[in-house]
Amino acid sequence: MKQPAIPNAAEETKAEQNQSGVKQKSKKFPTATELISHYQKRGLEPAEASVKVIEDLQNALVRVVSSSKNASSKDKLVTDARKIDAINGRLAVVDAKLETKPGYVETFVLGLASGAALNGVNAVWPHVTKGIGQVWSAVKSGTDPSSAS
Image (cartoon, rainbow, N blue to C red; front, side):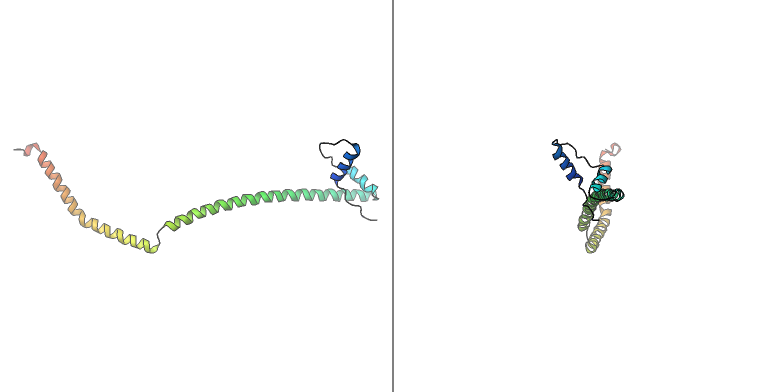
């Protein structure tokens, strides 16, 4: 026996619509009994037709499940791409911050300059405090009523 071609549900519904002359709004998919009778018309025994229908339905189910997995994997890829973009943006910010930081040589020079400035302040500080003290005592003695003659 030769294998009959797999019926296409969409073609059958179009053929039914053309025969009846009335267009249906939704596609009517054939039932299992309709598929079995289709295969029996093609020359298969009822048991062989049932097996063929089961195979067709399993294949259709596998196609539907695999297409939904592909859709979820596409969504997963989009989500992963968004995460990678976010990480890439954060990495770019960190990289920009690191590029603005001084290197070892610059840090050493800044340390030497700040040490020299601190030594200079330490050398001048006693003179500044002595001058402030003298100004304070002069103002205090000028405003003290007991020292007025």
